[in-house]
Picture (cartoon, one colour):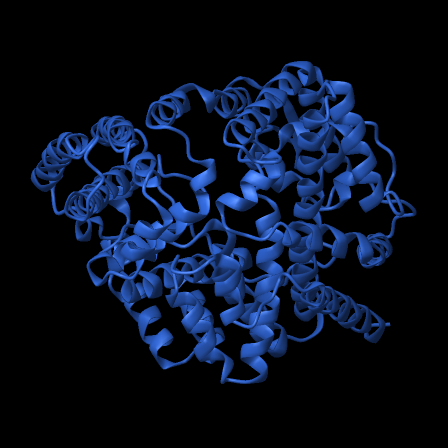
Length: 592
């Protein structure tokens, strides 16, 4: 379907960000001037007046840049074939680099100030919007380099991210996965069709897709290992240059997250791995196999009850499920649906998948590719969780404090999904209830257990290199195989290809990211259950949504009643998984 064939009421209204091309050009010209004006402050940040003026100018330029960048990218996401928005995006990306280089002196110069001066600025009402920045400077002082070194590192970013770009080029352009015969026709195997084929009821189809996919990575494993090893070395280099004990220490420090949380997560999953094995045993039994294969992990163990939702019906279900969050939350949802925050349907050239994005000073947006299946209903709830988090933070805080860390970014979206699941499960019966319970269990398997497995692998690889180990293809595959055995060997066949799975995970090039999915679902389970058990917890949750980046992210979670520094918090999520598994077993027994 072409975009102009879709009713405008199902399209987002990006003119709320930038009205037209004339405004875009005006903002761009103002940014160009601002970038030059920022550079004029170099060498002058030793007094209150210049520091205040520079920081205010920097914020102003940053906000304008955010507007044109977000607008251009989102217009291109509507239809990537439109040359006009390809050009605008390229233009916005180039001036973003100019801005980054021009402003790179600010933090190194302010770092030269004494802690006494910086603390005086924190207490100064003129700097109220920048207090978190000064606190961050004091905390990070020992890791910030000289102005010359910072400028050099800033310029290095243009090629140090090439490992990710090289992998993406191979993974999205060059690799050929062949074809798979499906329902009498040969279809080209891609990342998108692979996900669909792995859910097929035909085991032969799943096996062929799996073998083709992993076989392609096996053929190129030495090249991929070299690319990934380069990425690990880059991380370790920057950690060492900046004086961190390790690359993971740098990653956790940069987000102001206690390192104990990473350990608590991996320890908790390791302690409760038997629960995953119990789930795999149930999956094997429900599928009727004597032994599972890795290609059997994504096919539903319960057939979805035939539902094809109209968008309006899906919206009403989501609104009903989120009623426990209160009337003001419900009012915001109404606004999101009525005031064109959401781009609903797929069209030719539109970006696949879904996301929530936006810029400060304008309501957030949601991109969907709604087709009406049950998963699409959950996607609406998920992305609106992100959108509401951004809305509450942006509405409550100045620009400089509103942006929240990635560490908490998946919490609100997952809270919404869990509330929707519990609402639907409570109303479902028979096979539909079994399907929803199995859906919840698979959410745990793929988000809590699987992402922790990936997090362990990243930790192993970085630690190994820092201890002098060569990250060869053999080493990487052997380590991944050992991990997979720990998670799955109790119930699965050794297919000989699973050792290569690490080679197809793009998130590994955004290092130490995946663990946050696991801590996110853990936090969301605690919050959602708290909301449903006592509506007094709704206000503390909204306070969490409103805190943006004004506090360390793990402290912000504590406001919502989640303490990830306490291992008992992870036990709550594990109990939820165990209880859901028992519910599904009970449903299965009730049918016999």
